[in-house]
Length: 555
Image 1: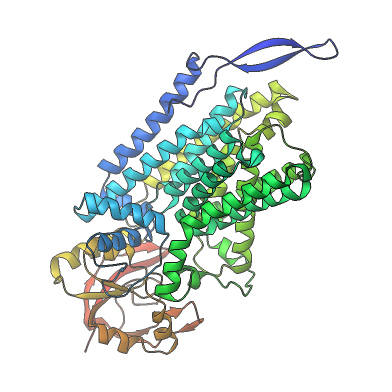
Image 2 (image 1 turned 90 degrees about the vertical axis):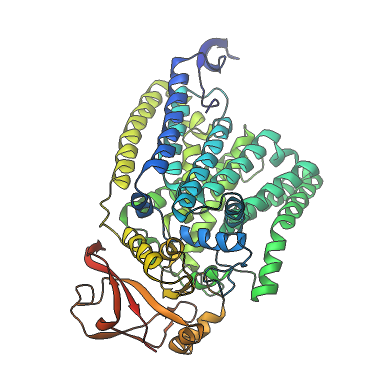
């Protein structure tokens, strides 16, 4: 946290016309009480997160972590145990972001323990990654910015980025790699000098960002577009820009291509199965449903972050007259690339994404906003024109952000355990761990939490961590024979939408699963009240009464 410092002194300097103007200059770091206060608060926040993860009821943690996070844990555990890239112990899958899976595989190889312990260690590892990223964040701001800018960056980074990125998904690793990429691009001025060696390193870091989350390819496209536009608009530096472009492309390709080649050879396409199911690319399916699925508060946050990113891109293009003249700070170039990547990704979501869009898909936009509040653009537009008004406005925003952020953090960590189905899935997993044999095979949709904590193999019925062949099974209405051929003995599912089933008032019903690749439903699995072997206490799910039920499948 030592880099969260910003003590300033005012000096007087004569301008060209003889007038004297006030200039903000950085004084020696570490001398201001505000600096130590900020460092202490940031350190305390990270310590609180670690203590919460280590001491909280495991069900409280599971309640605020996405179910998909346990997909990674289960696959990593199987890979560390030399079972291959599989979730259900049988079917190979590539439904994951690769770099985070590799990190977790290393963790499981070194620290094999109970599911609960590994779950906590995963979150502690993410907090450590975010702490490392936070140490690089202050260096991304312009020199001479006022202390309110530094505080705003730290506060928004903690409440908007850290609070959401410590989620068991790939988000924390993505924040770390993105911050390292921006830090390197700003420090080396690679986006202006385009030296081949530095461009190659920049490309390697870009490749790590893409492996952290594959849809950050738009950030890579923005970087390459920046170099190409520089070559077009500046003939005198065209050669250097093209050399830099080649270095970036070579570095990124060297990191990403082995993974893409593996996908093509093993699964018949470079895109992972989860991407195939969620995206209609190259056929447009323009809809706002994907954004509405985030929920009103988070959708508003995402739209605000994307709007700020779009404004920054427009400001950068206008101020530099579409790259004809350089900006004052190399930091602006790196920020513009991230902002452009955010805008391109959002456009892709609107045009091609048809299902399962979540807030962690937009973590780069949240990172951009946390950096933008301390950027040179705001420093020039606000502080240099009306420093007193801008400073007062910033401190007001900081106070409001702390209040809202702390209230939201408290709310998320204080959710009742009967609000949502994750805690119910954990209790059902404990039952399966106690009452079923190790070789018993389960089937379930949204099977991450149940599959990992039950320590049983589970066939995932939405197909996100299956192989591509499972979609043909659903399309051809062969699900029942498929499950029978695998020897599946139990089917588990939280139920809320079917009237009477959650309350136990039914004799039998037919449950179908959807093929998101082909847009059709499978054949029905007949489930009977008499076949229930486990039923959870009722809980609330989307304002409905729900129950987590496990049925024994009949022969």
